[in-house]
Amino acid sequence: MTTYRDAGVNIEEGYKAVNLIKNIAKETFDSNVITDIGSFGSMYLLNMDSSEYILVSGTDGVGTKLKIAFYMDKHDTVGIDCVAMCVNDILCHGAKPLFFLDYLACGKLRSEKVATIVKGVAEGCKIAGCSLVGGETAEMPGFYEDDEYDLAGFAVGIVKKDLAICGQDVVQGDILIGLASSGVHSNGYSLVRKVFGIDENPKILTRVYEELGLSLGEELLKPTRIYVKPVLNVLEKVKVKGIAHITGGGFFENIPRAFPEGFVAVVEKGSWDVLPVFKLIQEYGKVEENEMFSTFNMGIGMVLIVSKDNVETAMEILSKEGINSYVIGTIEKGEGGVVIK
Image 1: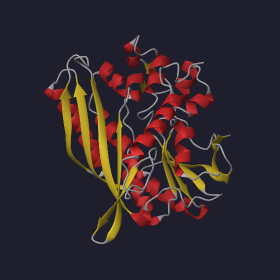
Image 2: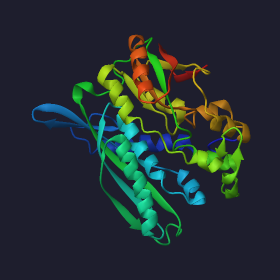
Image 3: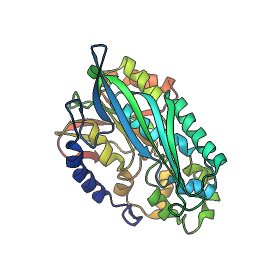
């Protein structure tokens, strides 16, 4: 049995770090800070023309998915991942992304490679409908290998205060709508690399698996889906009570962030199509099901929480936007965050 901890990622230590950071960060808060550390996006109240707006910001990186880009020498899509990880987070509060900045650190600056990476960032911004207004490129020889780089980003969006989504209206009987992912997205790659022994044998990335219909490397470099425009269209017509972006920590960490304590999300297995790549990872690495759901998105990249009366309308809008969606469960009273049955 292979676990995320075996791959060098200690989720529990990550939780501990966040708790320690919370108290440090709170010392800097002023009265305009609305959310605590740990929300999908950070919310800051802004007064504009006597109306109350909230700026919602988020920052993230691509993670060790970049190792796959290094091995494949393919750098045109990781920028989309970088944008997606940030804008999908602030979307969880109903915010429309306004602008984006990137940070690219490398061992040896190669202008054409940098341009290719940033072209992907720009493509992600176009998909999300926000502006790439700046960034920073740092050449750090001796810190990164010549052909290595790290990529992170920062997004700012805006939402009217009375339309901000924080899960406060979620009640028993509300429905979980799962939005299909494009693949592994941008988390869990330390476990993926360990399962397939990619670092020891990068050539395995060229292997074509019948289950996938393409090479492992091509599958793993599929860019993270950006949900901004489809979900904003839903928000124009439907009251969405909570939104969860399924990233690191999978179902168990992320879905409970979209509703208050005292409730539990009951997720029904078999209610959506688990993508073949996840079945392959589980089988190849002998990964337990619970570990899969606490590491990967399993084919569901985002979850919307709506009342029963709004399910059909929301799913119709998503379908028109080219997003497959599924009713994957319900909200019930209880404790424990998420139950998968």
